[in-house]
Image 1 (cartoon, rainbow, N blue to C red):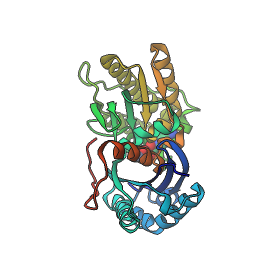
Image 2: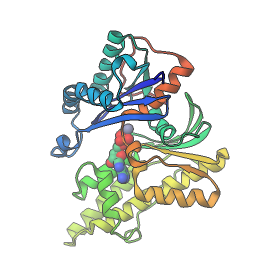
Image 3: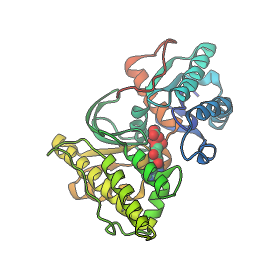
Image 4: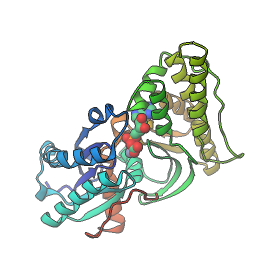
Length: 336
Ligand code: KG4
Ligand code: ZN
């Protein structure tokens, strides 16, 4: 009915996802085919297997996304696709699919930075949200505090010097035997634990720095487990999960508030898989509430990888910069 229809394609890690949006912010469908069951027995994502499953699933996911939205390919006005960063063999499947559809159906194409996609998830949930705002991006591969100055522009204020927050969750989950994917499991286990049971050191780096370092915390957790086992004591997984999580989130929230202070931000957007974490959401709500900062936290399904966030980012990128051409490439690393 004349609405601008965007197709968003996401294959950068272990979810094959395609979504359809109308007028940029209205989600008509968001099909997410997760490969979690496939990778669980390996304890993490196996890149080659991920690529193969994307290839097997993507046409079916596309059909489902179009039919659930009640549109056909002929109705689509724009195709947006994650072209990095991510597992290169996985990103390639999405990009090749997007190019083939673009060429065959004569639909403009734009490449979307996956991290920019995460930030754009909030546009779907909050119709009134517009840049500028401060954003905390926390995923399996990235941890960044950024100032989003326009729909297609942002300044990185800080980032991790080693492990990403999600990566730390996943590694700790693995060593305590909670399995993959670790974040949601630690989140759940921590609810029954005491965050003050074990005192882990908080790493703040230089005074005023908005950078992070989480690899030392991971080592502290490992050392703690080894010490307990050597002493013949059983590790309390709930207490350990709660204490580890609290140590990491204390730093994350403190630095985000410091960034808000430094930039005089009065709005904060959370993005990425770890933004689904219940304790982080609670802590940010308290910290922002105390400072009068308006907090935008998309629901968990919009935090983890999905096609709708890519469609949202694509819509604005296309409006501001126009289409990419068929030489669009896939990248394992792509700066924000
Ligand atoms: O954004 P995402 O789906 O994929 C990447 O771009 O990396 O993020 C996945 C990461 C994983 O590390 C996963 O363990 C973490 O997000 N995660 C969580 C939760 N849900 C997902 N971490 C903590 N608590 C959660 N509830
Ligand atoms: Zn992601």
